[in-house]
Image 1 (tube, helix red, strand yellow):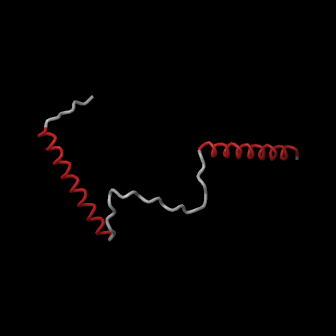
Image 2 (cartoon, rainbow, N blue to C red; image 1 turned 120 degrees about the vertical axis):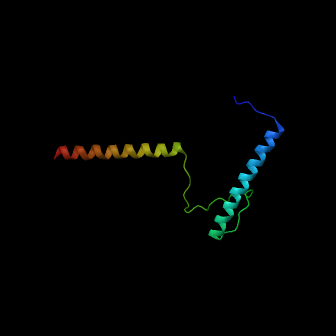
Image 3 (cartoon, one colour; image 1 turned 180 degrees about the horizontal axis):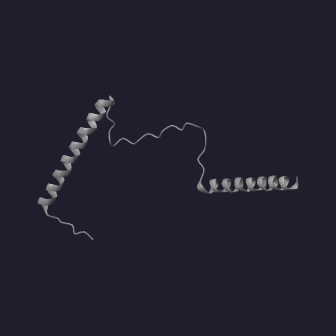
Length: 89
């Protein structure tokens, strides 16, 4: 496990470095927003859920598995009957 240092000078230097990086990143974000001509969205604002494009409901993995198994069973029966019809000719 990493050893944690509680040296105030070291912690202040780390904090200063992170603040500088944060300002640099925020500056680049502002530049991109100006280029895109959009308003700045506050970081603390929760992201809005995108509207669903269709009225479809979400299915669980188990439901999808049951549907897939049933479809495979139907196709197997279909191909079995088709093969029997062809061999009977």
